[in-house]
Image (cartoon, rainbow, N blue to C red; front, side):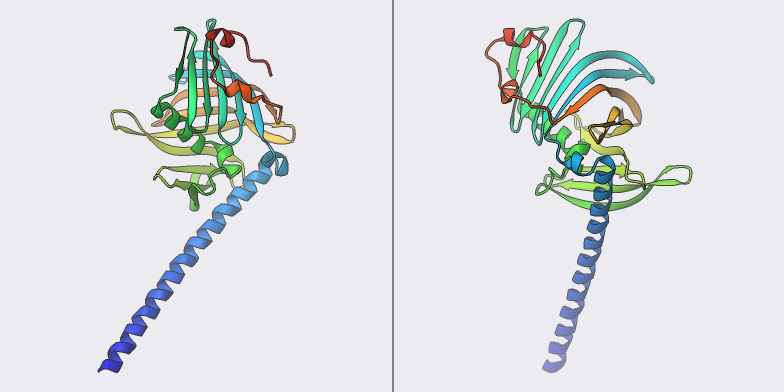
Length: 265
């Protein structure tokens, strides 16, 4: 009787081991598919030229949308030093707003009130969340060590066409899905946001009007949708890559006088 129990126990252990190996193999297959989608997209975006980007300077217009039309807009200059430094200056009707982030710190200049404030924990968290949903963050793999990449499958895009979908699942539970055409072109990022009242909304960033700049493809239009409603648009007029950016522009200035002048780069 003891021999039978021992044999049954070994059999069950073997079956459990085989099941684990099968599940693990499936997970590896999904990861390999996701990595293949990622690799194809990088090649489409410019390959090594794309991966070697260290800085990006973009200029254009940011518009708030109402019923499919531009409700209001601001001009902007956006300076990024990858992976986690960004300074964005907005200007409308002669008034300027500056938001600057460096890793876990940041500051904001309110041109109307003429004050410089240190960013709150909520503002810094929102900046990091934005970086986590950023297409460049995905393709340049700044998420490694912070999130897991997996293949979701194919999703209907238009008549007779389907997009490849991959997902980043961050350690804190936040997830974002990215869709690509079967040729590897980025289409959109999809994620959820919870407002201060605890209400959750579906957010989408949709990429359009890709332009070749210095051997790198860049979306010159990024439309944002909340619960299917078009809420804003980023429309780049120019983008420059790998231009020297001084660290001093990310340092909180001692006086508002320093921020009244246009950013020179």
